[in-house]
Amino acid sequence: MSKREIVTFSIGKPKTVPYGNEKEMVTGICKGKVEEAFLSKDGFHGDGVADLRFHGGPDRAVCVYPFEHYAQWEAEFQKPLADATFGENLTVANMLETDVFIGDIFRVGDAVIQVTQGRVPCSTISKRTGLPQLMKRMIETGYTGYLCRVLEEGVVRRDSTITLLEQHPANVSIQFGNEIYFHQPQNIEALKRIVAVEALAEEWRKSLQKRIVNLVGVKG
Image 1: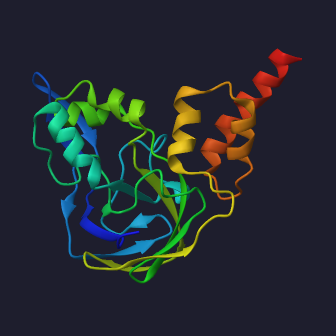
Image 2 (image 1 turned 120 degrees about the horizontal axis):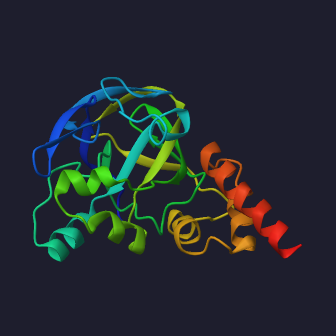
Image 3 (image 1 turned 120 degrees about the vertical axis):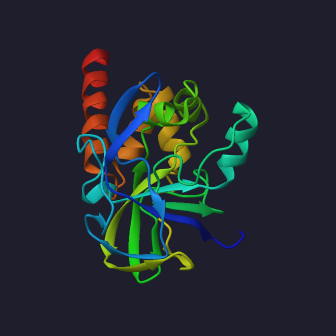
C-alpha cells in the first residue's frame, strides 16, 4: 500500500454561514487549514461542532475524509470543491473506506487514534456546496469518510506521518459498515458482526442493536 499521509489539516469553531437563497445556518463544517494543533480526547483544540446530537463527543473526536474522492465529486458535479469541504479535520491519502477497519489504531503525529464508525453525512454538506445530490451520492457510494476516538493525546502537525499500529482482527471495513447501515438494514448476521466489534462507537452500537432486537421480534 502507498504511504498514508495528511493532505490537508483543518480545524474551526462553529459560525454562522450563508447558504441558498439568503438563508443562514450555524455550523462547524467550515474549517481552516492549520500547521499544527493539540488533539485531546474531545477533539482538536480550536475545533468544534454545532450540533452535538450528531457530531463530536469522545467517539467522534476526529473526522477523516479520503482525498481521492474529491476528484470523483469534482468530475461528477463539474465544480471545484474547497479544502475540507466535508468538515473533516484530516483529509488523507491512501486510507479509503475499503481499506480502513472499525477498531484500527493509528499514530498521527504524537497522538494515537482509533476508528469508531463511518461518518453519517448530513444536509449541511449539500447546503454548503450548493449540490443537493452530494449527500445522497455519498451514501450511495459509501464515500462518507469516518470518525475516530483519541487513545493518546498529543500534537498533530500538517506534515505528521500516519502509522498503522494495529489493524482490528474482525476486518469490518468502513465500507462494509456503510453498506449495512445505509443499504441492508435487515441483514441481521451482518448487523451482529458489526456490533461485535468492541471498538464500535456507542451511538452506532445502540442504533444497530435496536435494529437487531426489532428484527428478532419480527422473525419471532
